[in-house]
Image (cartoon, rainbow, N blue to C red):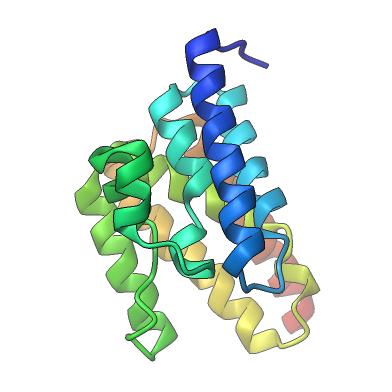
Amino acid sequence: MRFISPNDGHRLDKAITFLAEKYSQTGDNPKPVIFHSLNVAFYLLDYGYDGDLIEAAILHDLLEDSAVTKDDISLVFGDKTAATVDALSFRVSIEDKEKRYQEMFARINQAGRGALIIKCADIYANSFYIRLVDDKEKQKFLINKISYFLNLSKEKIGREPVWSDLAKQEVEENKRWAGLAL
């Protein structure tokens, strides 16, 4: 595990506190959002990513799963973090799930390396739950989402360890799926 400076430590404490307070006030998601967000952040911290990226990783699900707005994040953490979190958030106004994720992935790709790395870690963390989904078509959709993201992001972050981890996980999920489909 990478040790961080006291300044980054205070900054990340602030992000964790903000996440916990805001999500407990207005959060709505059956998954453990706070645990998941911290899991993604600490996974990235273990790989040595900087405080800016870890801060956005902590906050990455707030716009989707609570009443927090981009402006709320901007007021507390600045425009850069708010823009990254916004790029990482899907638009509920897009009803078709495949189009929703494609649109979000396109925005993430435009937002750049940091947003791609966070989304990669997010998808990686979520990938371990695919096998818990009862609906086989939804499982296949989730595996295809991984493949789509990997193809989209390879040029910009294909040499990152988080990308390699996700690529290995995709292979495992495809093997498992192939075994189920027999």
